[in-house]
View 1 (spheres, helix red, strand yellow):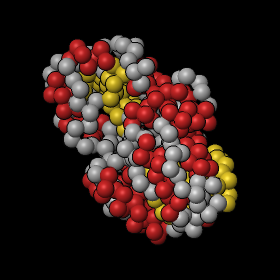
View 2 (cartoon, helix red, strand yellow; view 1 turned 30 degrees about the vertical axis):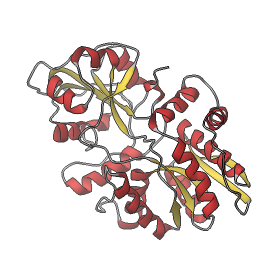
View 3 (cartoon, one colour; view 1 turned 90 degrees about the horizontal axis):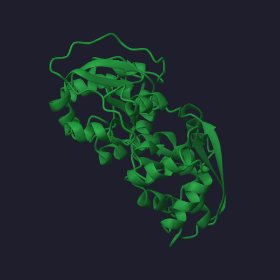
View 4 (cartoon, one colour; view 1 turned 45 degrees about the vertical axis):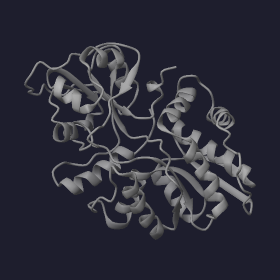
Length: 334
């Protein structure tokens, strides 16, 4: 399971805004079921199937967690930022899904997957040479961050830098190293990093600064980054955030492609929602579905945070809808 903290940080921020719900920590995977909850209507029973799809978040429940390069300001210069922005320009969510599939399912290394992507997308064309020197790109302890780190290595090497990618761990470890200049570049996620910096500077109950609108989020992120000595490049179209998935067979049977359609057609006792145990309290999970979309489910199944238990539950017909990450390789169609 990928060790990430974006959900935790985002949820803490949403609590500060709503003043209604508790925050959350890292997800667990107890595999136990929560007590039955009341729900009116028949609902939509699970439908087994191998292909998963993400339902469109048409009312913008989730904040904008677009991939964005984070740079120690002392190392930032126009050529370095322009090189990193080449990755952002080439990367959307379907491409990120395919990159994750290449590593997590096809078993390629992040380096090989990144090099194949760079070649296929002519990533190094037109990159201007910078002043050169040594650059360390930090990567988190999950495959997607390592892939992005390798893409940054490729473009920065083309800009004339001597680059290495170093896997460091979670944000609590690599963010201080980035601020100190021990590493110079890290692939980040806009909304989560904005709230990480916000709560670090202003306390855990700080008013949230991120938004479903990427421009609003990046404006806030850059303002927080200025205080910490960090510079940010251009966000990619690619997002990695909470997504609610169903099987293609479920979507076809019930005619749902959006969360609004799910709520309208599937509120009721037969609908089973699966996710991490904390989903029952997280504003961006079950309470958010209830408040933003009016979805009422008959049962919650406590599984994991975007991991194999949730995906297996969808595929074997144990749950109707499950929380997984929007860039998961499971969404790949080929």
